[in-house]
Amino acid sequence: MLITREPLMDWSTLFSLMNALAMVGWLVLMLAPRRWTALGLVPRLLVPGAIGVAYTALMGAHFASAGGGFGSIAEVRTLFASDPVLVAGWGHYLAFDLLIGVLLADRLDRVGVTRLLQVPVLLATFMFGPAGWLLGLITEAVARSRLGRAQEA
Image (cartoon, rainbow, N blue to C red; front, side, top):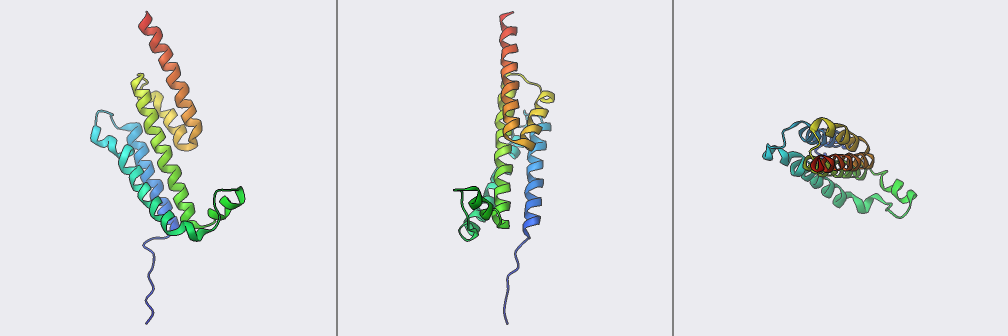
C-alpha cells in the first residue's frame, strides 16, 4: 500500500490566509487606540512574525528546487513560477509593508498627526508600499513644520 501525504492546504488557501492575517494587522494599526499596548503587538510583532515563519518555511523548503534566482528578470520570473515561492514572496511584501506602516504610524504619532490623517498614509502603504512611505514622509515633514511654527508663536 502506497501512503501519500496530502499537503495541509493548497497554495491559494495559504495566500488567502496571509492576506487575511495582514488585513487584521492593518485594521488594528489603523483603528485600535495606540494606548492599548498589548493590541499594538498584533501589527508590530504577531502578524509579521507569523508571516515571517511561513515565509522562512516556504523558502527553506522550496527555494532551491524552484529554479531561477535574483540576477535577472528572467531568473526572477522563473523563481516566481513556483507557487510556494510566489506565496512566500507575497508574504514578504505583506510583512514588510505592514512593518513600514507601523514605523510610519509611530513617527506620525510623535509629531501629532491625528489617526484620521494617518489612515490615507497607511492605506497607501498597504496598497502601494513605497508610495505610501513617501506620502508618510511628506505628511511628517508638513506636521513637523507646523509644529515648529506653533512652538515659535
